[in-house]
Image (cartoon, rainbow, N blue to C red; front, side):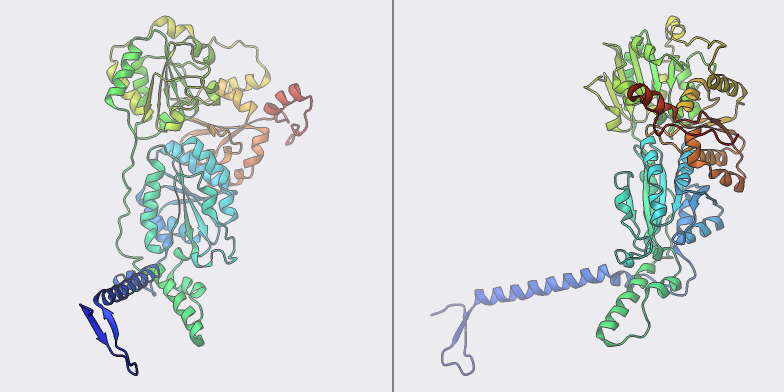
Length: 575
């Protein structure tokens, strides 16, 4: 009575048991699913343990090579000339290998200085700046400098040592969650799990740092991917002879872990730089801007630090600004882009000039606190903003200002294209002459007199590093950088303590330049120990200290508003 059924008589059972075909099919399917699931799980475990990879890639236990050599080779292929560091056992293989391939290893007295120096190299050379710091405290000491690089949009590679991956979370020396520290500060944060992944990880990280809106990246290299096989095996591989099933399983796991670290480590790899992606304004956007400028009678250009980024050479940007003939204010790293005596260079009375201008081109400048959040533009003025970063491009837009044209793209390339579109354009002479600041009188406060005298002494190849508050603010008003990329200040973050690192990187990049650090007496304390670094590495610099025994920039408002000078007073020392 059961079609498509199988009658089964069980041994010792008086009644036959019926199995339908549907039930048999279901059982077979369940068995097949179980087999597939088990197979997938086993393959997944084999992949996770590196067993599959080890089947096709060689492990060389007797090789003396180590991961630090791969790091050095990648850096060399990317044109890195300097690695800034403070020594530590977690990173020693990188430093030794870098020196062997001809990269100059420059050790500082604080990790923040190493990062500041790498930042300066990045800004001045157009290549990736590199700092290498040891695990734990070495990494945490770099946090402020990395944040400064992020806000200054400096492409920078920070390599941090770390505990062995297998020992993380087990109380290893200087083991902390380092990636969490940098996720909000860096464009990319990654830890390298095996030696074979060092090269592709670093190549991607460097390209990421330089692409789009540049910024820092953090690559963590655990200690077991940096030292040779025999060293790692001794430290991590476990005992050779064990008893019991549990002991043998642990021994197998540890030995397999070490073998997987080095599987395929020394196979041929591509070290060359990956393409860097730079956003560019469209031809239509350049044309629209050209039409707006051609109708303006009082145009003004504000050039920010971002305009000094590669790929446009500073000289080409300068030539384009001169061809446009529009008066300019230069901020941050753009100071010095135009010669000090250029008729296009406006240096003072910026607030008044912005109120009078009927068109303002923000070429990498941002409407943050430095431009009163966009409240300085005249009512009805046409504002064209060009910036690689969308957030910066529209900072405070529709609150205090609104761009007529907002271009997400490289500011320097945009200005070059604009100059080509506006050949023959001439700015009204009355506008060029009307906003120039009057020549300073001969009556000054002592700090101003000193800075005017310093400015008169500066040779054409001088480079100025600004590190301070009140005294440096006055210097920014008076000093005239002599050439493009000859002024370094911290940027929007306003970090004190950049002086030693910036000057170190600057002198190494431009050994022929006369490098000046303009210090406040407060900021000097942050990098005073780096004068030892200057001597050891034969990088002579000149330091000018505005010594008023006070945090004057703070005291000026604190006393007036709150009636107390508490925590603002210092002492006159070194006299």
